[in-house]
Image (tube, rainbow, N blue to C red; front, side, top):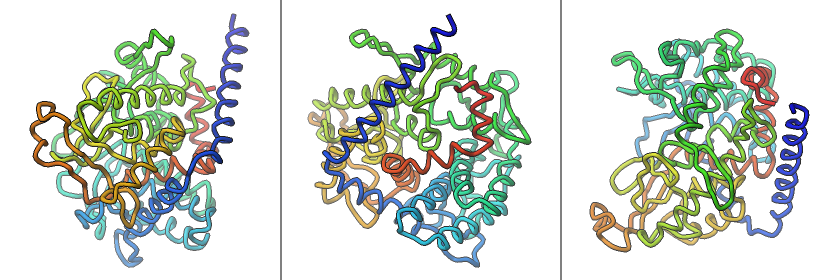
Length: 438
């Protein structure tokens, strides 16, 4: 029985690989000019919207947003920037020496920042590196920063990789585990203690791999499978027409199917339950795309070429917009272009068409490519009277993590360099093995 199961699984993975190769061959048939331009300008944000003062305590830190809030840096955005630099070297946009200098100096900065059990604050001052008032000690932002550092460390090797390992080894993953539930807490602050729980699948898949692969504070596989068991029982969508099923996130924000996937190449690996997370994201993104089209009678922004509900700015503030299926999703006509573009490895043609459509909207484009979001308003005021008088609405800011995930996913689409460097790290390999990925 086990032998038959393995043969079946192998055949499925071979078929997936064939489909992926076929998709790559279709690149020449698509107009990728806008995708390529957005790719380059997204890197420009990560490179230029950073502290470049080598005498500063915040050298290498990347702005959370631009032009808004010039003093704030996002630790996750720093991780995306670190991962992007090797690709920029290979693309010929910066020299090896320039890339090495920025990465090496940024790691020096990270090694001096205040931490709690190795975990970093979500937001810090870009000039001083000090905690932004009220910011939490973030496990997910620490994980994304570390993932980006690993990519850079594997590329530049030597002393750079040693510094990455020093950051990695200082993180006490067990500190962030709730001993009563055997799940990661979602947040921690010195003033209020722990809060929330990663009790469902979301953008945090990478945390289980990093924690299990730690040389100093390793966790076992039970943490991952406890979360997954809850998700599989409570967050599984079944499509009777296609006989497909997938595990979805709580609020259906597209970034939750992307952040971990920018680093972990899930395409040809399965866990002990035979779950392929790449295929899961493909199915979830397709369902999301169809959801937006089905809701297009409500909002002018929604169409087959204007889709992507995810965390971002909106007429009523920053929200985690989401589509179905979801337990509790919020949407009000606001589209975040990065969410569609970062889905290029899942829905290639739809992502490219969205990019070409967004490029025709003058208010969405600027020096760093696509801005964060826009909203053309409801087709009928009864759908959302709160924003009815405030649209059309276009945000003025670029957001660091949005430009980051856009760049990394497009880079993987073209070269796979982010996946390749992350997946060859010995800690990552060990973490995947501990979790039972095969």
